[in-house]
Image 1 (cartoon, protein in one colour):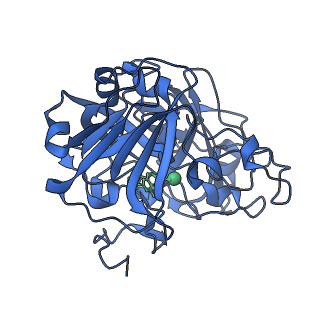
Image 2 (cartoon, rainbow, N blue to C red):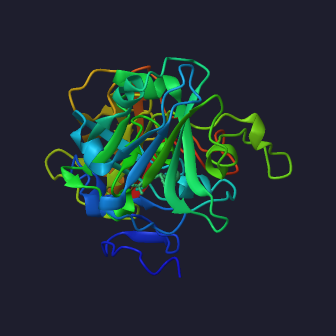
Length: 386
Ligand code: MTE
Ligand code: MO
C-alpha cells in the first residue's frame, strides 16, 4: 500500500481527510505562538508522503528552457546545504483556508478547512535566485519556473506547480530551497529533505519533496496548476466553468481570523472595563505588511483597533503573519441586556488592512466561487458573555 509509510502525526491535528492526510491545528492554539510549532503546523498532502533517503537525494535543475540555456545541474543535499544560507519568516496558507465558512452560502468542492490551514515559520535554505543566476538564467517577464515533487499520483505524475520566473529571480522574493523549518530539519509531512518556499504566494506553489526545477516558457501542466487553485465569478458553476480562462492563484489576498474566543464560547467580561479580549492572526500575500486589524462588536457601528505583533521587515518583503490582540468594549446595549439577566450574545467581526490599503470584503456572498478558494471575508464569531 502506498499509505504504509505515512509519518506519525500530532494528536491535536484534526484530519479533514486521512488518506491523503490533511489536517489543521485547533484554531484556539494558533495565535498563541508567533512561530507555529512544527508538529502543530497544518498539513496539506494530495498524495501519499514519499520516502526520501537523504544520502540518495538529488535535485535536478534544468535551465535549458531559459533564454540563456544553462547546463543541466544536479545538486545533492550536502551541496544545497553548502550554498549560502538564507533565513526568512513566511506564513504559508492554503488557497482553501476558511473554505468551510464559504460553504454556508452555497456548496463548494474541496476539503472543509476552518481558519487553521495556515502557519507561520522561520525557513532556512539556499536562495533559488542564487542558483538560477549562477546557471546564467536571465530575467524574462513571460517565463516560469516549474517545480516537481517526489509524490506521485496513480498514473505516476508528480505533484507539480509553477511560479513566474520574475518572482524566482528577485532577491527580494526570498524564494528558498528550504531544508529547515524553525531551526529543525523539515519533517516528512512538510517536505523532507527539501521543499521550495515561495513567500507571499498560495501554499500550493510551495512544492514539498522537491526533485526537479525547470525554467520554461509555460506554466506547470499539472492538474494543480491548470485545473485547481483558480478563482471564478460567483455566477460560474460546474456547467460553465472553463479553467483554461482563469489565472492560477499566486499572491494571496488580505485576510484575518479570530482565534480566541471560539464560536459559542462563554467569555468572561472584564468586571472593571466592560471589555473582552480577542486574539487572532492577519496576513496578506505578495509581501504586503498588515497595517491594521479592526474589530467591531456592533456590526460596524464602532470599530476598535487591535495591537499588532509582527516582524520588523520592510513592506513588499513582509512575508510573516501578524498576530493581534484587541480589548473589545461590550456595546452598551449588550451590557444593559446582561444586567437585566438577558442572553448576552455578542458577534465579533474582524477585518484586516494591508499596506496597499486592501481590506477584506464584508461578506462571502460576493466572493463565493465553486472551489471555495480565496475565502477572505470578515471573520465573524458569535460568543456568549459570562
Ligand atoms: N507539494 C507536494 N509535493 N505535494 C503536495 O500535495 N501540497 C501543496 C503544497 N506543496 C503539496 C505540496 C499545498 S496545496 C499546500 S497548501 C502546501 O504544500 C501545504 O504545506 P504544508 O503541508 O507544509 O503545510
Ligand atoms: Mo493548499
